[in-house]
Amino acid sequence: MDKRVTILLPNGRRQNVNVKPDMTLLEILETASTKHGFDSEQHCLKFHNKDVSLTQQFRFSGLPNNCVLEMEPTEKRRTLSNVVVCIQLADGSREQGEFSPSATVWHVVQELCLTLADSYESPVIIYMRSEVIGVEQMQKTTLKSLGILEGRAMMRLINKKPEDLKRQANVYKPAEVKSKPKDDDDQPSTSRSAMGGSSGGGRGGFALTSDMVKSLKRTAPEETAGKAVEENADAAAVPKDEPVKAKYDWGSGSGYSLHHRNRQQEYEDADTEELPGKAPPVVNVIGPRNAVLFSLDAANKNNDDLPDSFFDLTVNDLKMVLRDLKRTASGNEDAPLLTSNLRELERQKAMLAKLNQYKDCVIRIQFPNRYVLQGIFKPHEPLSRVEDFVREFLTNPSEQFHLFTIPPKKVLPSSETLLELNCVPNAMLHFTFVEEKLNGISEGCLQAKYMDQLTSEEGALFAVQKYRLTKASVSSTS
Image 1 (spheres, helix red, strand yellow):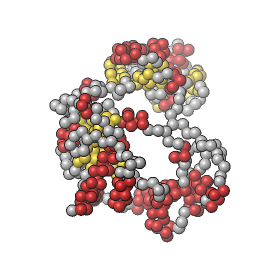
Image 2 (cartoon, helix red, strand yellow):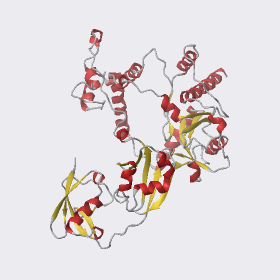
Image 3 (cartoon, one colour):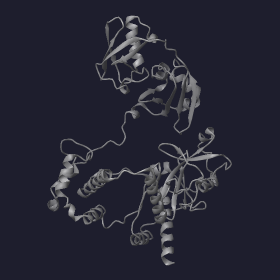
Image 4 (cartoon, one colour):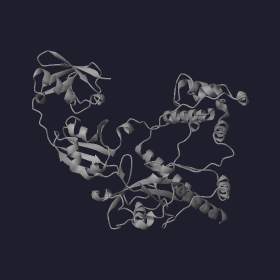
């Protein structure tokens, strides 16, 4: 729905301007100036005696509807200077150039990526939340109308039909209401209220509200039960007939924790995986350190959509959420104030604990073409060993490259150990060439012979599990 702002002009008159969410404040200023004969380049807008940025869109400016903006003359006339525009393509590569704010979006696309744009059936430029769809609209839209007046700007060029842009991903669809069977009469009556069913009041999702917490406090056992309650909740969250699999948290940072099981359960799972009915995934070892290579795009294609029943929360799930919230709150309140020396001592203690617990660490290196190389290292090895390991698989081993973690982007020094870099027990590192132009070549990173020996992501996890089980059996025998 369109909104309206009021411009207080220098001659004391007021001008109402109807604005759209993607309309820039510069367009609002030019609209008011044109109607009353003022030069917009010599005036600015103020809100509560503070200058507002004319490059912002109205939806991001924080200005309320029906607000009053004051138009005042500036000391210097605004002059348009060239801006640096960078276009990110679908394969992740980027092209940039310098343009005038009066240049059209189509002119920018022609200068930077004309060949690719001509091959697209429906090219779309996305800047902030503004979408410029089709060649005809790109020819009418200038950089100035998008609020690009100075500095740098990043755009995305994609090939999508206009109707696909309005389609929202991962929309919640409430499950169908089924009649409750008679066998469930013994279930506590608070389970439905604690689960926050979507059939009542039209509410969707499973937010942890105050009503849920109150119902959990009524149904949960007394706090004097202590550790027994927590163990029962953990055991009830997993069916007894299904074996527990090791879970790896491969975040974009480094040093994420690995959830372990007891040794006896691991050996039982290893035996069940060798049954004829449960064939293990195929693992193609392509080099030293149990090196395997897999593609994230292939892993995403094989992922099936989870049913709605997967997201149904049980009472035990909410009990564990409440337990974790209590632990977090008590830990923040009771934590003592530490000096820098004590913090360093605590950090060293944590490193020693990791070194005693984990004898190996799994390192994954993600390349710009979304291929991931996995290897197993010792915690005390420096990062230079990982770089030498990666260099064996590159097409040009002599090219200089960096390994970094995100977010935020942090280039890792080669001299520090994996333990010091918080890469134990596992970490996901990212690969980039020092020379920027090499990063845009999607097929120029890894040798072609390794691209034909890919392993699935499930196979990569299976390879780590089998390696650690083998090491555990050897150590127990010795």
